[in-house]
Length: 275
Image 1 (tube, one colour):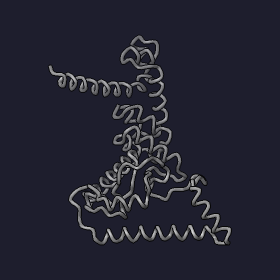
Image 2 (image 1 turned 120 degrees about the vertical axis):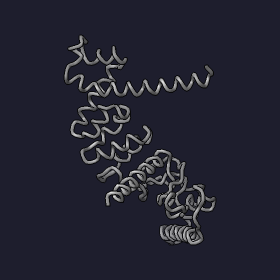
Image 3 (image 1 turned 90 degrees about the vertical axis):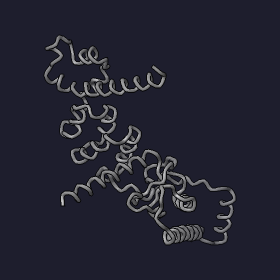
Image 4 (image 1 turned 180 degrees about the vertical axis):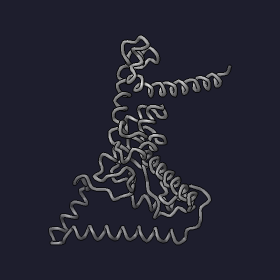
């Protein structure tokens, strides 16, 4: 057996072990309800889980608590009991789960990574609106007056102010001019645009998107560095890199955005085939 064959076999066994452990954990709420552990000579459900699967008391309590939290959310409770997804993923969404968003959360835990789920939960908790999948791309709010201006800029602004010039109007005029220049550049790119053969975004388009959005994720509640340019107009359908429909996202929000796109396309396909 080569090293690669040994590794692949270990990988396969490890994945299977995790899957069966997950499914075992899903049985524990029913084991506890029926008091099956007593019938089989175990002192408690914790002893039952430890001796049969090596689970800690904390892990068992987590499963039982999740089952209670999902008592009125059958779609999430089914994922737990059938061991379809990990307990860790379900635990991450439990704090925001409601009867209204349970189905959407069930889809999310199937396709999103743990990090992406954490980001999704944080976004939901920080939002004042109801609903799970809100529009992603909104204007960011400024958390506080923490602008860092250079001494040179401060001196020039103070000089203008001492002359009786309204510096707010000066700054607003410059900002409006900047926004107009960006809008004109984007419009010029759109007018010249032809269908693209690959997902590679040309440098000129990257520059104008970066000029507009900066280097941070464009989600209003997120201030992580942007890692991906997301096509809000699905590229597979449009074949265009239109800067009006590009948004820089961090890794987690890019995954979330694609999961939302897939969900929307699936709903559209269902409507198409049912009509």
